[in-house]
Length: 67
Image (cartoon, rainbow, N blue to C red):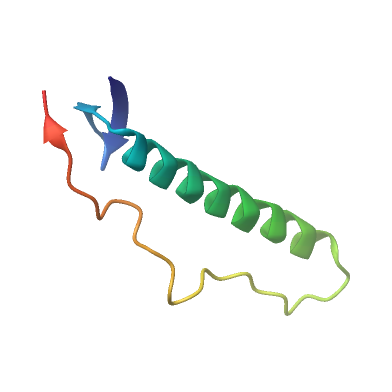
């Protein structure tokens, strides 16, 4: 069991290994975006914008079996 907060609502889901791996990949993407944003803010250029790619998967687009 793992608890998630989606749109401010807490809900517990039973996850398979596939979903745990999928969520871990999403967490790595988010961390990479945050790091890129912090690196961009340290540069002297003021026109640096870090935006997620159009091809990124939406954060909550997977279906779980509720317990």
